[in-house]
Picture 1 (cartoon, helix red, strand yellow):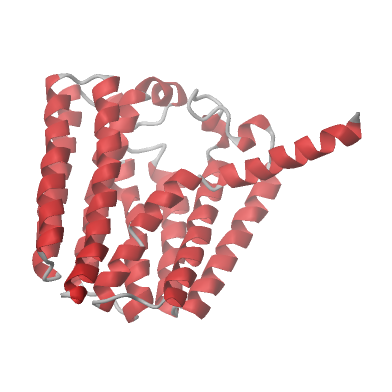
Picture 2 (cartoon, rainbow, N blue to C red):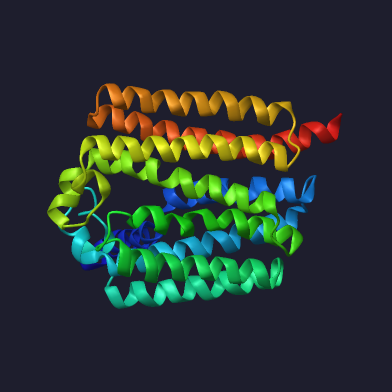
Length: 299
């Protein structure tokens, strides 16, 4: 009987280690890592460099997410959305998760340093430390502005990708960083509207749980307008072509329209539409950065 259960237990443990890394979040981070590399290169970066940057960035984000789950395992147990996580249900032990996170970060640093450069490796490590110590340990449980400041960690992959190509950080890199930085709060607050009761239960002061509806809507709108303005500034700074301009304008209009629907009816359903639209918008915007470069090269 025990022998028959072992493969199932091993599979469950493996899935637990994968879940610790939050794969869906990593996918979104990689979307903002690779396209800036095309813009920085003013062409197509080497496949090897992109591979090292993607692998290193993936491992770094995976380590940061693992540390986040290790620290938040107490509040994860109180929230319906996170009650199934590996450290809550016991699929992985806290000690094993902590070691796993350290190994992932060490591997990420080595791969980025060896395959790209020291600046890219240091930026990825700094993003992890910021996410763990500034956001998770300090701001998340103490400030309604937690995701506003903490969003810097999620925007760092833009800088990692740029630095991997050039070894420096230019104005275009910082504008692209700012796009993700200002995009993060309305994106996450939309999700927090849907799960406001969970955050209330866990006593985590996400803005939709502690502020008035009007205050939440105003802040989401201001951040979204900033994102749209920054996306257009990036087009000017990077001398982008028509394809990027078209996506930035159309995508910004679609993102803004979803905010209008949220003003009309602030419900979990409309909030989730904003959440999903924000993901599509960011993905398309950054994809357009890379495709625009390739298209213009072919002319």
